[in-house]
Image 1: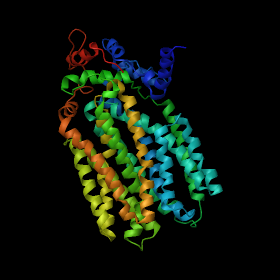
Image 2: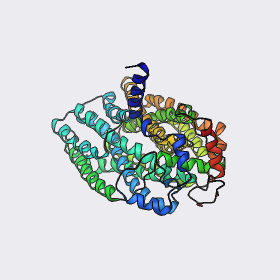
Image 3: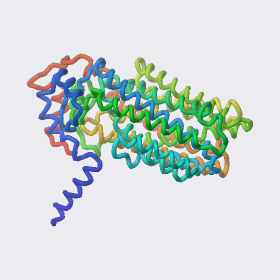
Length: 489
């Protein structure tokens, strides 16, 4: 076999892994722009419970605000479930330190397993039920290693949610509301994160012995049953299929609003890669703080019990949820790129205060860090996807994979906490936040005009307003001129 043939075969296998083989070419998108499906055809297609080629333009890029409400509400339920599982992770970390006698660094292994799974990704959504049930034998055997393995499997399932749900919410509806949509939807994820530590403090661990793990078993059994019912609902729900061709089609239609869109190879999407790096550092820092919030409270306020510390964590997560709703509302009046920069700046200010203060002052400033963390993940996500077009799904998978930062930062903080203390350990997430802060600074200095163009886009707001000349809108003529010059993958 020749080198070229072997190289092509190897490239095909690699492309299948990263999604390149299902991604449409610029020419394939252009060829379909003259015959987009009507609104009626889009509705009918969403009722069919079968797959759609990722290279096909289904017309979903023109979904209106009204049409997007039901699908977004259904997917938002998944965000709540994800937040609930994540909220339990923070409490389990501290609970296992007491129940199974593990160190802080070992306890952080739960985060390492959970977020490490995001780097690999899951195979199927249906595996969620098995993933939740894995906690039962781990509880019976009182095996911390078993719990870590179970958490890895749960993380694999939840990464499916992230890979699919985040870009779906970001693109399901008018582009001008993309950041606000994902911010609002993820606000319910924050509510799940609040509910989990509250239930853990008042129900799961309130009336059990310090060595009892039965509550953990039944909690995840309940999650498994809920997921099974949710899977049935999603099977029958009319959810539109948004393909990469649709995303490219939407970008082309919106190009006339000075979004700066031009079809480029993925390797030249520099904003995406900066966003991936920023998300890696941000998520790592956020998870480290959440994992060690209870330990921080017990250090700066030594007389606090674990139940009291769990309640304070719930209050901080409540501020996180409030911050998400506040940011979503604020995006109606303030540009998302500015909100991202302001919130990141305040995080750095308050975590510095938390490192230096003791008692209630330290706890309050760390809780404010969670408030300002609220909008960071969804805003980095949506701003990083702007202008990707046919590369959107692949780009989204890279951003989701960057969540594995949550597997890196907590163990490092745990080592520092074991050798020094948790308060000094907050220097680790501070470094992550500073690196992440460079992304909104870059956006505001160099990408302001392009990002602001999306905020005035009329795609999905006023169908047909762009008008057509020779089968293409003015935006299509601009964007497709780059295709004529031979864009490659």
